[in-house]
Length: 55
Image (cartoon, rainbow, N blue to C red; front, side, top):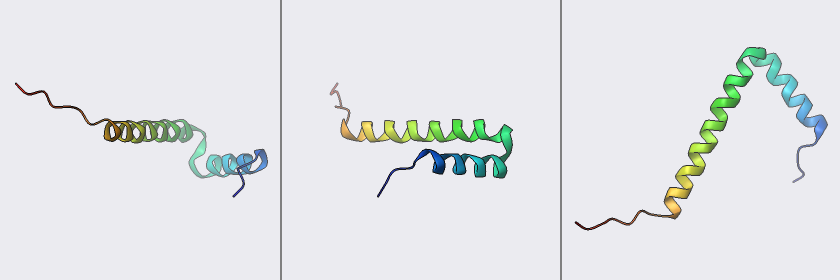
């Protein structure tokens, strides 16, 4: 499978601008970034299970 090139990226951005408008795009990007960050944090926490300290 080939990667997305510049022309394809421009088409995707143009369609997003038409669908959501200029004001909604930063909000959507912020939400997407937070979702990706939470997903990565969840994966990291599964890789390193916390050791329980015995009292």
